[in-house]
Image (cartoon, rainbow, N blue to C red):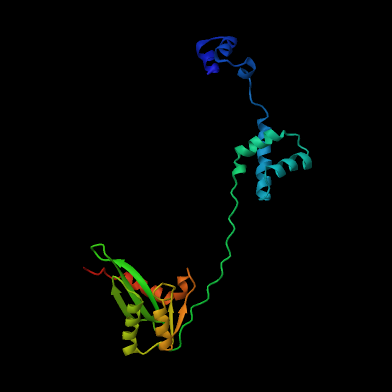
Length: 225
C-alpha cells in the first residue's frame, strides 16, 4: 500500500511511512539470498527423500555439523515448513490378523446341521423372525420357520419336524443366541444324542454355510401381509 501511494500519488517516502506507521527501512527492504533458499530447499527435499524417518532436527544437524553450512536454524525451519515437510504422514502399521481356519465340509448328510435366525419386516412395518436350518454336506435348506416370536420351544418343535422326515444330525452348529443356549434346547439335544457346537462370539464366519444361505433368503421377494 505504501509503495502504491508513492508511485500513484507522487508522495514522499518519509510522509507515506509516517502515514502507514512503518519505517523507511521496512519500505526499502528487498529480499535477498533467494538462491541460498533454493539450495536449502534442495538439500531438505533430498535428505527427507533419502531418509524417510528424518525430521527437522536431524536435517538441521546434518547441514550444519556434517556439511558445514552456517545457515540459521530459524531460516532452515521456515523453508522446511514452506515445503510442508513438517506435515509428512507416517504410514499406518497393519494389524496382523490370524488367518481363519477353513470351514470343514462334512463327509455325509446329517453329519452337521447349521441353524441361524434372520430378522425382517412386513410391508406394514411389523418385525418377524426366520429360523433357517441347513445341512452343511450339500447346503440344502431343511426348513424355514417364520413367526413374530421364536422361543426355544418353537426351535425344538421345528427341529423335531425336520427329524421326522430327514433323520437326526450328529451335530448342530449355531451361534450364542438366547434360544440356542437355553436349557430346554440343551436337554433336548442330550435326549436325542445330538452335540451342540457353538461358534465364538463375534465370528459369524465360523457358521458361514448358513450365513450364505441367509443371504439367499434375503434376496427373495418380501412376504406380503
